Amino acid sequence: MEIGCVLLCSGYGRRFGSNKLLALLDGVPLYRRAFAALPPALFTKAVVTSQYGEILAQAGKLGYLPLLNCHPWEGVAAGIRLGLAALRNMDGVLFSVCDQPNLTTKSIENLINSFLESPDFIHALSWQGRRGNPVLFPKALFPELMALTGDAGGSAVIRRHAELLRLTEAGSPQELSDVDYPEEL
Image (cartoon, rainbow, N blue to C red; front, side, top):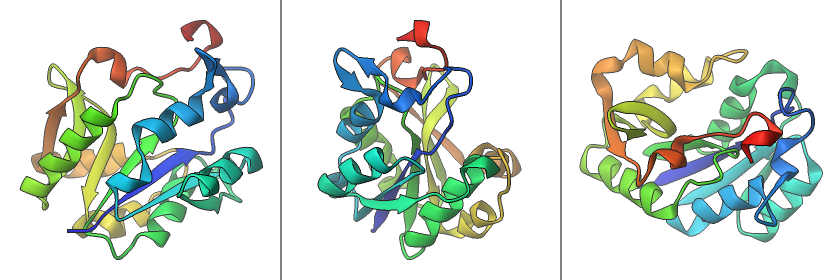
């Protein structure tokens, strides 16, 4: 079973006030924390979509396929389409944002294992039954993901196929927390 990974690192960080992916938490930029939680070795192929050269350069050095997002103003859908286009032959693709600094590799491994047991379903990390990110989609839903526009992310596809959603409990609620404002660091 071939599983791909798309790390979405293209956001503007408007609420944060700057490129939050370069912000440090315990001396490590947020995007590097995401890279550590989702190492390319876990996947058949892993890509990073970003408008930022520094992030793409580091991604390439660490074994990800760096993909320049030339349309970040379109919203998250542009990064989803870009990443998925490079992984269209996979059986499933995991999508993750890069601003969840407490995400752990163990939770990602559990999510992958859940998908391997039921590869026709959508698998999402959760905490006490509440869905979060990352989310791993089966190949059958790739056409719907490729049709997304604007800031409509994978949640739109999940809502249309709620019966396919399977939740995998994260190790802690903090893993699902993302950073929107500097004081959240």
